[in-house]
Image 1 (cartoon, rainbow, N blue to C red):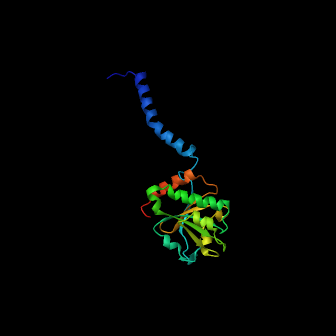
Image 2: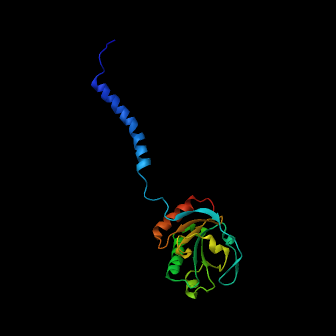
Image 3: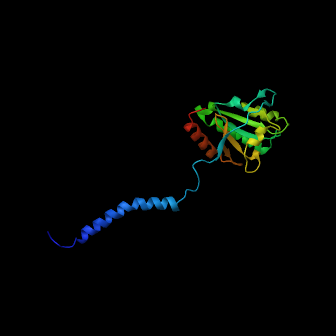
Length: 192
């Protein structure tokens, strides 16, 4: 056996192997502690799921209604006064179009306008948004169930097929991003 020192070439190889082994570990620590993604994968704000109250209400035409009638379906919900200003009209248009963009999954969704006052919805709105549930909820506990960062009328809400409020879109939403959220929800959901 020889007492000769190891060659420079074998030391370089050893250091190279050590560096290649440590590089992924160092990169993972850097990514975890110093690189934070700008935003989550979802556009809408996820809410802590909670069941909506189910009081006896009535539709705009006087027919009795309970929110539990929609169980088994996803619901796009807007809360607005019966007078329906420009923001209300835009939200009604959005929920109609969002449902249509879901293609074969469109039948898994319902649209709901919760009317927060005693005013009757305009005949033009009722005609333009046929298929929407026009629910009168004046002074109902249901109105207090929708959390808002400003006014409750600023948002479009998503209720799951079990009757849980789970997602809220901001005022002046980006429809393209809303569509992505809904496609993802419907694809991942085994219910509704």
